[in-house]
Length: 114
Image (spheres, rainbow, N blue to C red):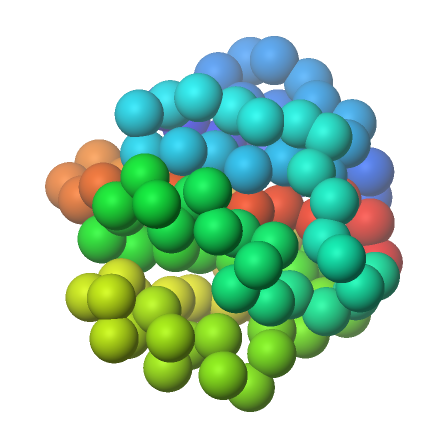
C-alpha cells in the first residue's frame, strides 16, 4: 500500500481518493470515516482498535498544518506496548508511512484538514 498524495481534505491511497479522516491498518484495511472523541486531540481511545492490530509503528497524520495534538501520555502508552509512535503534519506522515511500511507492520491515522 502506498499513499500517493495528500492535500487539504484529500488523501490518495493506491490511486483511490479518500475525503474523510481515516485509519490504515497494518493488513491494508482502511477504516473511514474515523472520528476522534475530542476534535483536534488524539488519545489512546481514538486508536484503540488500531493498537489492537499489533503494529510495530503508528504514524499519525496531524492534518495539513499539524493542528491535531496527541495526548501527552499517548507516546508513553504506545511505547509500553512496543509500538513506535510518529506524529507529523500529513505530508511528513505520508513520507514516513511510505518508507517504513515497506519493511515493518505500520498502522496510521490521518486527519485530512487543518
